[in-house]
Amino acid sequence: MKKLIALIAITLLSMNTYSQNPEPVYLWPAQVPGETESKHEPVQTPNKERDVIRLTDVTNPAFLVFKPSKETNNGAGVIICPGGGYEILAINLEGYEVADWLTKQGFTAFVLQYRVPKKKEGALMDAQRAIRIIRNSAANYGLKPDQLGIMGFSAGGSLSARTATLFSKKTYTPVDKADSLSCRPDFALLIYPAYLDMGTNRALTPELIVDKKTPPMFLFATADDTYSNSALVMATALRDSKVPVELHLLAKGGHGYGLRSGNIAGETWPKLAEIWLKNIISDK
Image (cartoon, rainbow, N blue to C red; front, side):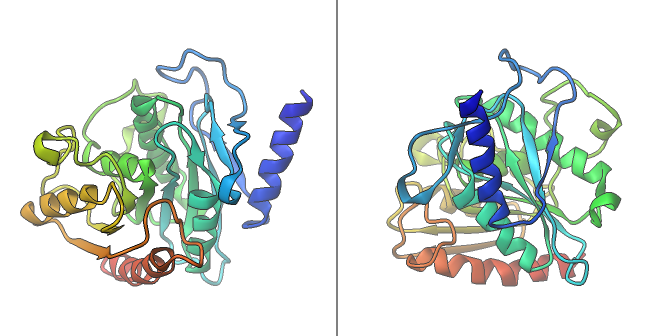
């Protein structure tokens, strides 16, 4: 019990660095579909390398709400999917810190705590359910229901791509009226995404269905990133389907930098994404 209390205190302290009042919203009111473990708080791993908080053993998926000021609220929202190889969630590096950046631009940010480890299908259920819940409560969040996007980093980029291309796939039995709504995001940002080139000869991963209904995407990667081909094949598929896509590939930067200073890629993509986001929401 003492360890659990300490974990909650550490997590809240980290979140409060970026938002005064983060609000957790649990996705599944009863049994979590496909989950065999009982619901409990996520587990923070002992690895604190690079000042990254890593959560695992997520059995009660939720999203945390970070709100802009009333004066700057632009009526759009973004669900953030942290990365971590579908094993952990780099919850501050690719979650809270990104939410802080988004709220300063007027977006309402939702940091998704999707299921890990090794629960790839459960993660897709969680992302779809989160979109529907947020759309169902759009007025409460000061959002326009047709201006809700998703963004992800590394494995979170994979999850965001799957959510943006598999929105017609029924992954769970409807729970309530929210599940009658669309789970298609209106736009997507994939930052150093992984696992999108699992097809033959590193082609697009077969499960990803890219067509004219796929939402517009912003893609960012670096040439020295082992996973950078994911961004390239996704951009090609989007272009071939005549879906609006913006791709940026820097020479260096590596992988897993978030938006922290000291890394050229981490300092570059937010500036480019900010311009893209403004254009996306202004077109609606």
